[in-house]
Image (cartoon, rainbow, N blue to C red; front, side, top):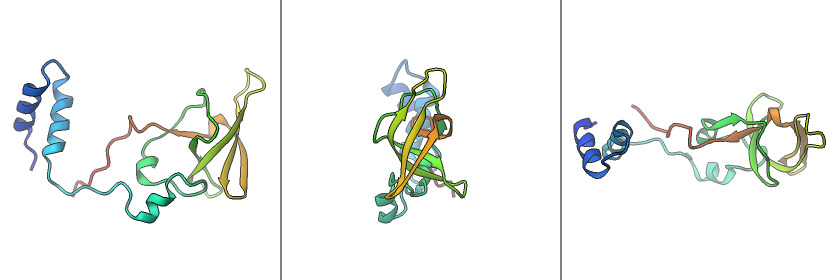
Length: 138
């Protein structure tokens, strides 16, 4: 049962001066006793999260974005589209930007014996701060 008046009252009392509507949503979420969908549904999903070549889980799939102008780091976990146009995890091995006027090329590991070189424009990064939290609205 959502209690927006309770949430607004708690937000006002605890956080004077902060954005009221945002605080109210946060407090309402804390007071909400509805069951939530787990972020990782099984232990197997948790173990495969970030494993090069594994499909993205729901949490990471909701947080992907293209950001080709950023600097990529070796061993960074990113996402790319596989041969079936599904997003899968990949690990950055190195970034080559020999010519500053061109998009950098990234050498990626997509599995134990699978390497691929892709332009940074085809590599997705994760922005969990912008992704909505997973919920079960049933």
